[in-house]
Image (cartoon, helix red, strand yellow):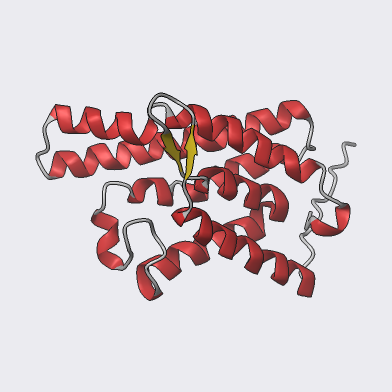
Length: 191
């Protein structure tokens, strides 16, 4: 008879709530922070994607998704926490697909990390999370651009600006962000 291990449930306590709030504010702050990287004339990098994957790695699937949903709800209904503002009309912004993609990215990356924080799992979680965000973001943009009858050159330039070289930096910094969770003290981790 094969016995299946019971999945351990995430521990909900005051510390978990504190970590969730800290990650929530970190996601908001990372929306408005830019780093200039020494590439060509200076590439502007926004660290939100690595922060989202860090949040999932630190909090686990359940609480990571709660933070992401809270961020989306806050931006759509309460405060303009998205890069270009907020409100329900934001769903018609070309970049909103990247924000929606945070949900499956956290889901899939934390699924990979459930079997441990090995270097291989961390690399896979970063790769799957980043590709998920960029692919969904691009598909969403292409859909809206098609509805708005935008030309192919607009679509190409938009994809190049949002996912071109940025995907390389997202992969690198996401790997480092998730790797950092591996070395955090156990008291800081929820799962």
